[in-house]
Length: 181
Image 1: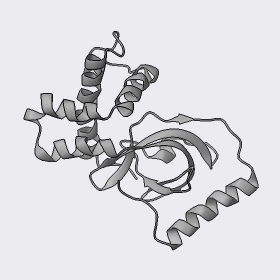
Image 2 (image 1 turned 45 degrees about the vertical axis):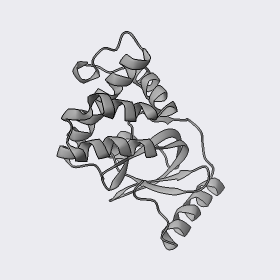
Image 3 (image 1 turned 90 degrees about the vertical axis):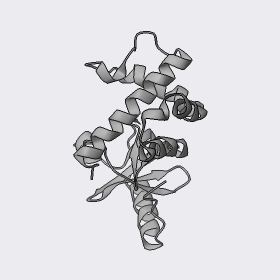
Image 4 (image 1 turned 90 degrees about the horizontal axis):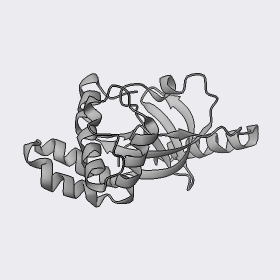
């Protein structure tokens, strides 16, 4: 599952100016000036900016105070919601019609949508489960990623694969799959 085309576009319309603000205020990368107008983004450079933002989410409040006057209230609420991000190492366990299942190190189970492409499309052919570092953020009534995931090339054996399947099945059975933040 992905966001609608309209919501996918809205995400980036809200996301890139925030990154520009963080880069400008914290002087993260001089080479990156205006993310919205860059033809080819270097994920490593963007990840540097994201790391600064996630280490200090009060930057979101500052951004909204300084630059939020022209934003709709709903858009401000979406951006403010990103302070509730969930970061860490996850196992991408399976793809479903309504999103992809991720399991955190503390065995919480998340259903995460893609923004423009589904997780299945982004990691086409990758064997599941797949270990990765990611940041999940709320977008309206679903969970998405900040788009800057780092997959690890770690082989997961049959027994561990079964363990992850059991974690998901138990979460599903008990109604504790997290679908929004």
